[in-house]
Amino acid sequence: MKFRFLGSNITDMNIEQKLNNLVKFDKLDENKEYDISVEFFNNDLIEDSLNEDVSYELKKKHYVFIRKVRNFFEKNNIKINKFYLMGTIIDLVEKEIKFSVKKSNNKGKKSNIVWPCKEIFIYEDNKNKLDTLLFSNQISLEEYESNLEDLKYELSIFENEEEHEYIN
Image (tube, rainbow, N blue to C red; front, side, top):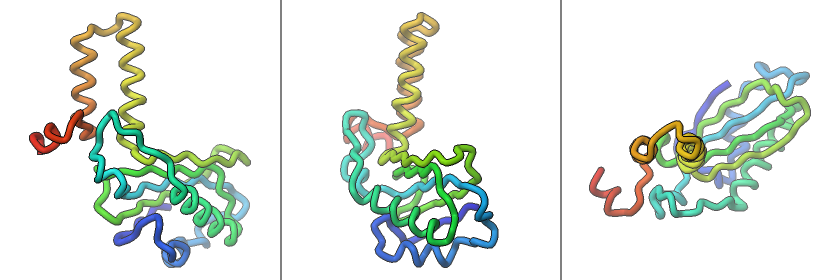
């Protein structure tokens, strides 16, 4: 089940009401367990523009949102295992939230996974893979640097604000 909110933020006080208007509980089986993935437009990232040197922190508002959504589903007798919360400024428009509810393969294993900046997470993961290839001599330094630059460009990650303004 997928749905999205426009004109919403994870800090909205009426998030449960918005969920109530969209979630079709008759399509969810109370005997099954589910995972939730949420992508949200993270306004905090705009101020720092995507930069590999900025640390994107977990904030109380991320966990408050997760607790509200988990409680909402539990009140409706739906068990939630994994909850993925991912911030972005690339894939969504401002004040947009995308939800996905899928059957879980993680029976009884509850966890919350928060990535305030999805792009940096993807960048770090791919950079680690490139590092491994470089250190094991499977790629040259030139290939490494080229792939790293391509990755930064693809994810709109810039080393400084001037580079960001120049490209856009």
